[in-house]
Length: 103
Image 1 (cartoon, rainbow, N blue to C red):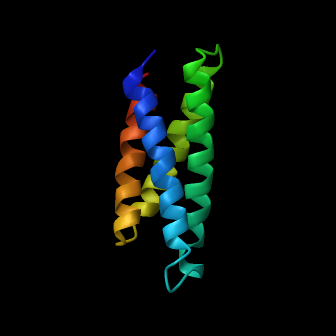
Image 2: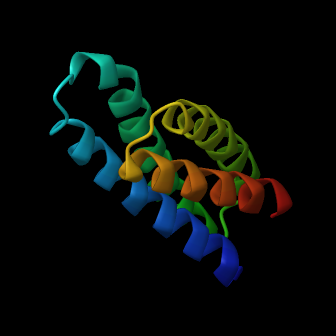
């Protein structure tokens, strides 16, 4: 079992959930809509990927490819915003994308 990958997936899911909730508290929530949606998608896919990796599913490669894509899109969107929670999420997404691709 790849502990580094599992850790990256769990940390990314947590960072995305935290970012989504924090974005909802920003003054201009409408401006954060895309960020929130991508945060929610990325967190869900990271959690799903975590399950597939933990049970060594024969479909984990396909799920990890999808997860890497979600992480890239979410990370790119979060990087556009100066909020600390967005920057933290962008970094977690970059680490997770890399871990998914290396797995």
